Image 1: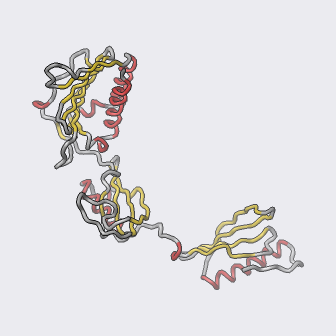
Image 2: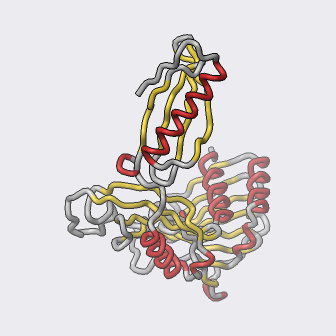
Image 3: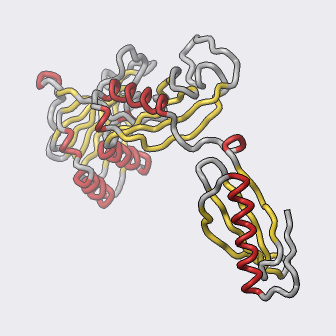
Length: 311
């Protein structure tokens, strides 16, 4: 739609006349109630003004030129051609109820951190269990992230929330630790030892001990190796040892003293790790590593980085 104003109108009169016509057109067409914003844009050496007119159901955008003598409709967006940006109440309730049960927290303490519409590739919402048959059909739905503190759960749902699955790999669920019985604690470190790791399990079932000495030696042996044939000795600098000790202090490794973060029930072929400093011992495994508290994850990374840097 384009209106051309008579040449005998001065700019101010033309602007007033344009606004009056526009208001009348939009009021009749869609019962719009207010006009919001005006921005200028330079295009082909002529100034064009863009105004956006809003109500609860439709968005209308019109453009006028610099002297307000031409008017055209740029676009009209309605819900039929725009995806909703609101999370349906049924999906919200289903996710919060599932998260409350999983985290053992009241719904009032949980927060929906993020949500976005998705189209899943199958009836299992792309989270099929082993040997599970999934219908091969596109399923419109939502990806919703809900959390409390360091814990976040990522859910896949259909459009209404009647179908819902937890994406465990994408979620961050710090594990609930258990106290290591005194009878199961490893022996304390000798005075010249800074840190020790004992790893066991996996497919081979072998157990290895790696110790870091104050002088920078990093010694690894296999427990039960009668000939000591798998012993390896590498070294890092004393400065690197001191840096690692400061990392343990910074990440409050002592806070996890004598705690064990167990593997999920039914898990198999995982490797368990027992880490011991001069201040205490902590146990975890390769399955649960990503769900450890953030500080403990950082301490584990600092240890693995030191091992990787040894020569």
